[in-house]
Structures are given as structure tokens and as C-alpha cells.
Image (cartoon, rainbow, N blue to C red):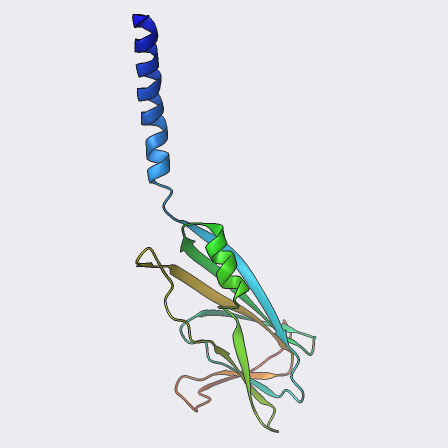
Length: 155
């Protein structure tokens, strides 16, 4: 009987030592996702990308559509949080146009910080934008300017 009690105590202590650090370290992990959207604007001549605070990659395509991929990494307690944020289209861009000019702008939505347990989630977002070849795109450095203009050409 005494040996059984000692054996049980050794198993419990060993289990505590092995499993306790694992459960403590699982407070949050980085989850990744990609959210896509596309636009088919009429009479497209130029696209403004108001994404100065985001990493951006431009890919030229022979399609008439603008395709936007938001590559997202969120440090969250579980995957459901990220799925919810993506499902709410938190990382989608808005397409704004100037009537009859052929100039369109892709603008990020206003996003307030997400708090869980009193702490703000760490979100990293970068965009990959597929633009029709021959379309100019610009990155406005100040409101109302077209400081950097590029003509989209195929690779």
C-alpha cells in the first residue's frame, strides 16, 4: 500500500512538471489568413492605393478586374477570433471613385483596436493587389496628391 501511494505521488509530480509549462504558454498564438476581394470598375484609367501604413505588393495582370488579397497575421487566443474578424470583412478595402474620370482609389476601412481580456490584439496586414496592365496606379503621399505615379505593365 505504501509503495502504491509513493508511485501515485511520483506520477502526479512528473505529470505536473511535464504538462504545466505547456498549458501556461498557450495564452495566444499567431494565426494567419488571406482574405480576397475583387472589383470590376468601368472605364478604369488610374488606381490610387491609400495604403501608406501597410506593406504592399503590386502584380500586373491581363484581367480587367482589380483583385486584392489581404494577408493577415493576428496574435489571438484562438483561431475563432481570426475567423470572426475576417468574416466581418475587417481587412477589406473600399473602392472610391471620382465620377466620370476613370480614377479609383482603394482605401482601408477605419479599424479600431480589438481588445480581448483588456489587451489589444497584434494585427499585421499586408496587401497584394492585382491591377490590369496598362492601368496607372499612384500612391498618394499627402491628401489630394498623386506624388508617385506608375504605369502598370506586364512582367
